[in-house]
Figure: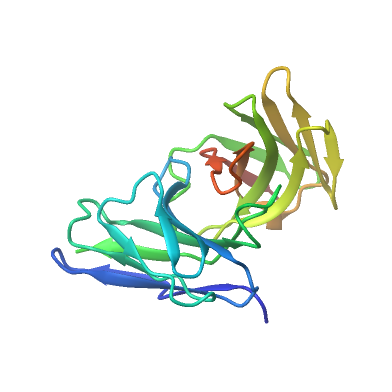
Length: 115
Length: 113
């Protein structure tokens, strides 16, 4: 069963804690992305990675960190420096990010709530 | 459930009727457009795409129309079904950087039985 998986589906965090959201894909895609979704707003790009061991900041990277040690995995850490972390987090992947018309496909999302 | 759909414009359609969902895009240099469907609490699902050198593209029960003159994109769903109830949003991809999607805020489609 091919696709993108995210875990956990729901995550609760106390203020001051770091939490890590998992994203795994078995589509053999080179590029992976993290987005944040808030009510009434379009998706906003946090970080993206075009290839293993390389990643770039998106539009709202402050308070977040990522790693890309394996092609299949792109975990996102929400640090205590992120002032308003409660949101729905979406991971996506595409065959590459340099090819023309490269479609991004999304995982099921993780809902993070700060208590 | 997922609260991503709060405060979105809503289109209510009778089951069996056709639905038309609109999207205004911002960048005249965008050369690729995608429609996504997002059900409550789930990730967005690819529906259909269109390149800027096309005016129309048809899929199964869905048609996307592109009007570059007024920078407008529409999604038509034929014979709307209850399973079509979701938030629909468009994405535009400017030329020169395919990672840099620009997402619309979305429209909630409610199918009335």
